[in-house]
Image (cartoon, rainbow, N blue to C red; front, side):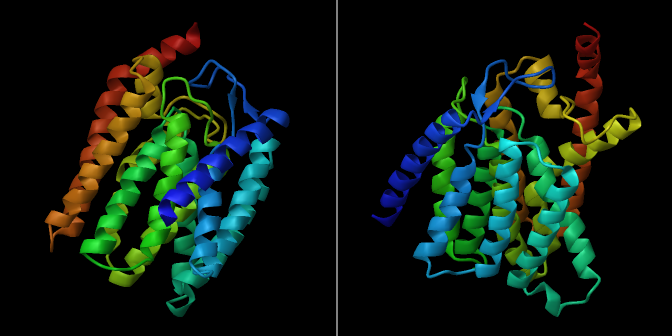
Length: 319
């Protein structure tokens, strides 16, 4: 009954946000770098934060440092959806919020050098999720696949986090999927959605890694990671500004240049990540070898596919 009630509340909150976004003109206008051609409401992913807020309330205020950091990041991300905020300001708030979340991880009990490393990796993950939010359904589908894997581990392998946090966030993804995982999306996640869900996933994954000491669990983000890092390297090679909007991610080329439907590409990324993640559970004792093989395989696949279709992107830009 609790989950049904939360589903209804989150669905109502999503509809209420649409009225607010419409009233205040919080929209995403298409441009030459967009993968859509219509004006769409932006910031629908605020439902992920609302889900975390509801969890915080019904759980008796568990993980207060995590929720504090999440709130800071969600506020600055939503502000950026409403009116563009300086990248330096956003990054500063993100780093401060991550330092707060590290308290929840008890990270400060370990060697000091882990802090800057954790900051770089964590900030990279947050921004990778933000960069990858470019077509209908990809953020919600991919996030769902990662959380399903984490939920399975929490129940069958190693208990490391309150199940209700994962369940409630999955409900919010279901609600958002109803409006976004469709040919003509009702809304986009916006920065508040992509970054907020990234923080939630990062926090849960961090709890698992810290408890087990097994860094191979980072393979749960391998598909996003390879696409993000190699796209950045490609743009650097082309001497482009990596902070400017673009359509050079592999998933964007598949959707825009090859004209593969958005939902097919989003499903491909989510299912591929789900297979890779569950594959880790069957290689006990060889996790790091498995992770290395997966990353190398994804890199090779990325390079081969992109080399075959990138000329279409060049031709489009010359038109």
